[in-house]
Image 1 (cartoon, rainbow, N blue to C red):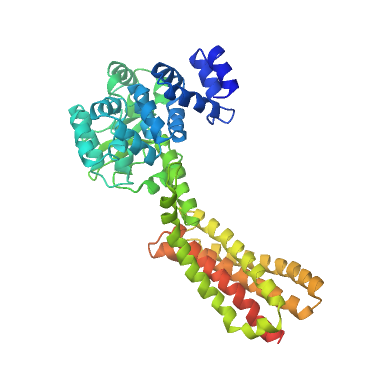
Image 2 (cartoon, rainbow, N blue to C red):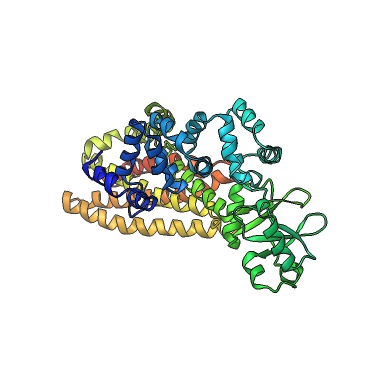
Length: 472
């Protein structure tokens, strides 16, 4: 423990507010000295101090703390997290860390904690358990909660059914505002922890409209829900979560009802769930573009190596093929040694241009800004951008080459090669993800290897082929 932490521990950290202020830095990241306080309390076996330090933090910050602790210290800290706080911490944990924390909890304790959560969060935690652990935890839960979790887990992964919470506030069309408010007050234990709309249903329990809570509170008590309700955008229970996120973003939804094949209301999805999905999908795309997995803070060295080595091996093969173009023109390289210096520059600049176009294309595909309706226009635009960038860079590169080597034909060779490679990079960067998506492959995963191969091969080949025509 640092001297500063000693002073703070003895004289200032005597209230939850003081501990919270000390624990979080200005950017809301955990203070390393706070983490040291937790570790020192664990080393001393001071459970009450651990409880005091943990109680002062928001559950999301406690989840963040788990990521800074080793598995040994997690085992000492987790038992001192109160069940109600633990319930909110579990959904916030990284998957690998959550698996370790779940292993530390007996089924009864986990079942008690889960009862504090909504059905969607319950299912998200239970699905990470081994089959035997899952059966034990479900057996310890009330029948209603158990049935809700089992129903949620029966839907395919990454669909609206897995994402939704089954708790909704629904009311018939003939109810008045006053009846609805009175019902919510008298049955508050049955309501979702967070909701924004009251869904108006017909006798078949199909959603015919929705009333925002803010609108409900502004309306007169005698007004009927059917008079103040608005149309709803329904989400099919088997819809992919990426489609759900797109619908929320397009129509600026805060919440939406989820319906089964018969159109019956079975749950709801709220915007806080969508934020998590968008972040998750963006993270997956970024990692996929770099051909790496989500290593996480607890990933082992060998685990990271195994996740990255296959793509690097494939890249090694494609690069070997790309440089084979040098062997075709080895006599030309021997005659003009400057080509060996300039080829990597042309190849590297083309690679960067391809990466720029590829990143834009993958993001546009993910956000539905690039579709079959505007594909030709977008492809044409990127090709024009590639040509313009190629010409401008060729002028700069040609001038630099002439200034260094005093050879006009060499400058022209490098300039033309740069134009050709950047044009190929732009064309490959936009077409590769479009074509891969058309055949059902993830463009973020497969495109980078193809574009890298194209720009490297074209960079070497263009320089040497043009040099064979102009210089020799």
